[in-house]
Amino acid sequence: GAGVSQTPSNKVTEKGKYVELRCDPISGHTALYWYRQSLGQGPEFLIYFQGTGAADDSGLPNDRFFAVRPEGSVSTLKIQRTERGDSAVYLCASSRTSGDTQYFGPGTRLTVL
Amino acid sequence: GNSVTQMEGPVTLSEEAFLTINCTYTATGYPSLFWYVQYPGEGLQLLLKATKADDKGSNKGFEATYRKETTSFHLEKGSVQVSDSAVYFCALRGSSNTGKLIFGQGTTLQVKP
Image 1 (cartoon, each protein chain N blue to C red):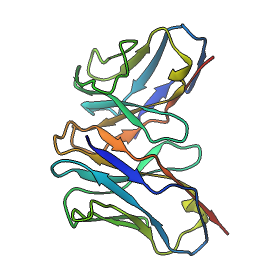
Image 2: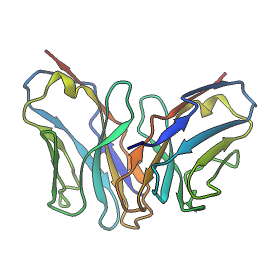
Image 3: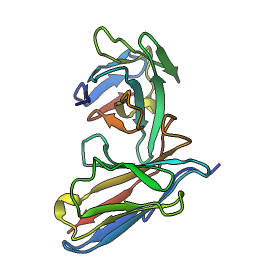
């Protein structure tokens, strides 16, 4: 069956611009997670959705980062006024419920020039 | 807070050699422990997991035992293959069960024929 998909696969933007990254979870998975992976590091948790609501957003680095999941399926991670330090691979994962195995998408590589 | 520490890489082995990648953790309560693998050009995949002390997770010839007394979850394989070349991440999910994973920094394994 279809796995977690993320679009775009690559995004290059200029400092100060706004970007949106999209995640399509596995059908029927109620839990959705965003992580950020910098070069040579492990993924770092950003935010977790259970259904439509953000159950844990403790990993968002500052108020330039925001994520939504309005219908409990697709999620969008939004970054305002991008900075060079935002350059990383943004990973999305979903699971059937919060305690189940997380399945990861291929990631979106964001480069801020 | 919760954290995971992995041995630094890269680890370079000859085919059929024995593999150990060390992982230790700090956590309150009773976390679940995981090994994820990232093959070149692919997304993160769950390799194995253990949810309570003394459990052994195993998959594809890899094994890891949840040792609460030493707060460790070392990954082992008796005979590595070239196809095992990848980046390996140790991770934990806290006992509060929000679902978020905390990852180590990753260990690159290169297996030479």
